[in-house]
Length: 208
Image (cartoon, rainbow, N blue to C red; front, side, top):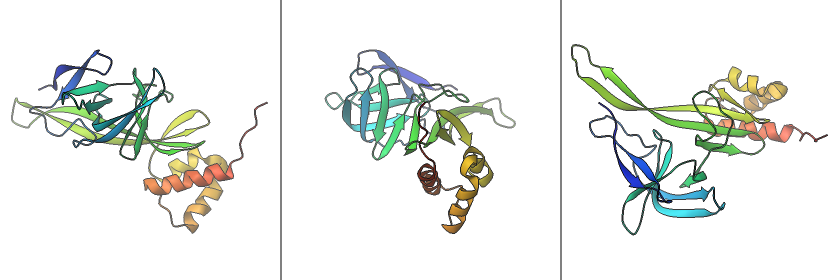
């Protein structure tokens, strides 16, 4: 059983495949519900608002409903460099790593000299049920965290050793900071506090 699709028009008139999930368990979207969204155009750098939008984490595309026609249209990394859904920011253009290239959209959790990114992706898994020739398909959500430091992107696990390895130049200071503030390396909001502390304690390198 495969994901089905039909062609709809993008904002620039080019065709885009709208993900359909009839007969497939789960959803390809980060959230099924539409929310207010914004996109940053690659062509002119301007931001555009959309009353109803959502993120297809399977296709890695921004989907929105055109107010005048109620049609669902698509924008991808060839047309936009960044988008927002409610208060969440998503951006591409980061170095390639794992299965992601520079046109892959990450959710930006922390955005200073050091950055914390979340890869929200949906995979389509097909399994053969025991005692049956019928293959069941479902969308499975996965999350991965990455730190961008000095132009390098590094995947991290939500544990002390992984975080301190990436921030090794301030490892002892960070460990004391986490202990004194009772932070948790597995909690995203605490990881943001850790990176804020790291950026404060790390002097800006002067270009020669």
